[in-house]
Amino acid sequence: MDKLIVHGGSKLTGSINISGSKNASLPILAASLLTDQQVIIERVPDVSDTNYMLQILSALGCEVERYSGTVKITAANIISEAPYEIVRKMRASICVMGPLIARLGRASVSMPGGCVIGDRPIDLHLKGLKAIGAQIDTEGGNMIIEAGSGLKGQHVDLRGKHGPTVLGTDNLMMAAVLAQGTTTIESAACEPEVVDLADFLNSMGAKITGAGTRQITIEGVTSLGGTHHTVIPDRIEAGTFMVAGSMASESGIILNRVRKDQLLGATEKLRESGHLVRFSDCGTSVSVSRGDTAKGCQITTAPHPGFPTDMQAQFTAMFATTPGISIVEDTIFPQRFMHCAELNRMGADIQVDNGRAIIHGVTSLSGAPVMASDLRASAALVLAALTADGVTEINRLYHIDRGYEMIDEKLLQLGANVERQRGSA
Image (cartoon, rainbow, N blue to C red):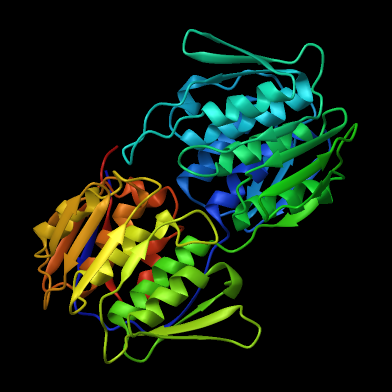
């Protein structure tokens, strides 16, 4: 397995381009199954999650061509059974359910397993598909989804005890675009990635309104055509590098290809913590540097437009060396604090209890061998290592490769002293 060796103490400077959104790319790639015409998707990040999705599409019968961040897909002759050996590697593969049931009237997809950051059930996905006419059985660990009488538009409430479901909203939206009649999704997720999927579907000929709000309306059409689409910037990658700038840059780093309106939560908390964040007039570039009077603050995660759960680990790393006391509460994934034990190995002072981390800022961290446990936890360890004394060895780098495109090369571009050590699988 690959590992990242980080020599702490470098002062970051320079600029990088933020990649296309991993979380937007996955359902958009899956949505290519809805048409037999070619779709062209630009700025698809070269990360392991998108690679797995393209493998699934190929196994389903799609013609896939990829070059320099652009993907061309033609799903002229596809099958309904997604292969377990690939599906098991990525939970987001369940977003092929909606397109397959809409296009073929049948889908066979493996049940997703648990997750290291806590249970992420798919009951709301199934609730939505059942509401518009799908019948669902399980057989040999697979979900067999059929719509022999076709899908019919309905009023569906996707409210769940942990808030809206992004992929559940995606799945229902993709299934409903080819259903008879009109589907209204109440309690829909309103993340930017859901809006990007709706924009992609509309460019194919779908009739979707309300994306980005809690109510989405889909007027079913008989067929969709090809399109050419550019994926939105990755707001979590952008937020991660904004934190890097606040921790390890005095002169400021510049991040290009961002969207100011998608970074409000991270921007607000960085400024509240005393750091300097300046956007260009058009909001597509941002400069971030460490403030002279950094201080702790409190963060509580919430569905969009609240503070994203995917950023709490990175802010926890920043707070580890921020003067004062900071509190980070995750109401979406209360178990998502495995990075804290590794940060404590580096000298942090963090107590975790019942979905909340209390962080007493220390003067400095020390480099140590640490273990990544999930995608965002691994990013937090990289951030901590940038300012730690000595050398930090981050193991299980495959976690970060799921969602950060060429993170080691981008850090080198900003002046960090990092080295990827290749290992056997």
